[in-house]
Amino acid sequence: MSEKIVTAAVLVIGDEILSGRTKDRNIGYIAEYLANAGVDLREARVVPDVEAEIVAALNALRVRYDYVFTTGGIGPTHDDITADAVAKAFGAPIDEDPRALALMRARYKTEELNAARRRMARMPVGAELVDNPVSPPPGFRIGNVIVMAGVPAVMQAMLDTAAKTIETGTKMTVQTIDAGAIPEGRYAEALGAIAAAHGETIIGSYPSYADGSFRNQIVVRGRDPAKVAATQAAVEAMLAEIRASVRSV
Image (cartoon, rainbow, N blue to C red; front, side, top):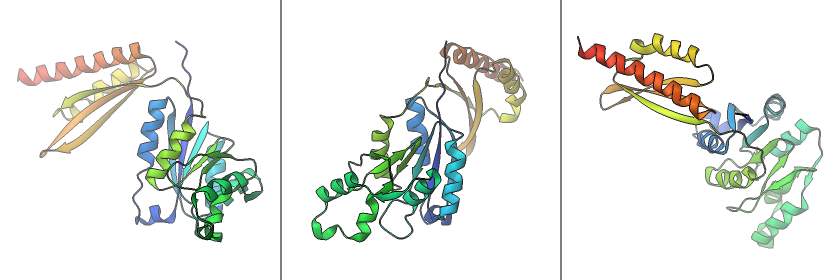
């Protein structure tokens, strides 16, 4: 089976994330959204509102992955510098985009569209607009970089729009196996052997704590459903063997 892999990174921009004042709610949402679309999120970074930091991160990520999604820093205040940083990363001039300004004029009264709000119409020359059905200013895309708002509801609406324009790959098949109260230390060696024997799939072990005790889940991921099923069967057989040995003691 031919497998097509499309990759992406997320760049979260904002001092408020790094200071802890605002808790990021975008990375997880984007990761799940892209996975369901057939895009592998391979990296996520958080940088401050510092132009040099944003430019350096963008230039590192955009050559490594098929797409880079940024969130934050496209508002009307002095620290909203994402558009300028993206323009600098691409070596593009930045100016007030007449299309963006027209959209904002349609939703703001003339007296409301002050200089601060007009800053949100500034974009790198040559960028494509990313529609924003929630609030007046749009996001934008230049090259493989998609620039979105940081407010989760607005970002999610922009992502719906942007997703229509990106290339997607073969979706992952994911199977979750409940290991119950079996400690990771009991199955770690056997699970490693299964992983080595089924290299076409990805296996992860994830402990959690609930109701006063630890529980474990083993997750098998891969692009070939048959190979995922074979790995899942091997994991389930291994767990059944451990449970049987416990009962016989």
